[in-house]
Length: 69
Image 1 (cartoon, rainbow, N blue to C red):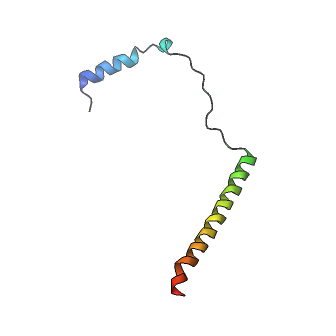
Image 2: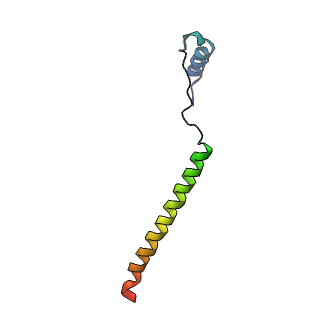
Image 3: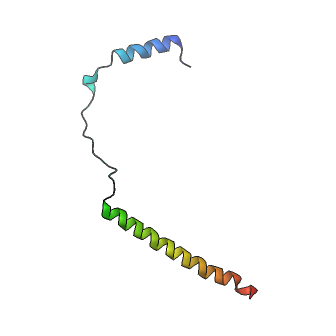
């Protein structure tokens, strides 16, 4: 909660703010969207990774159940 005298000081600062003192900056886009080809490559890489993980799971499952055979 803000005290009334602090609120008054803040209101004065906002009302007397000088935009002329702000520095000019150039904005650059840093989070560009992927291209169509980039999306396709990401999807392909993801599918390859999933297939690899499935193969790992199958081989681990075989060794896990081997003592019970």
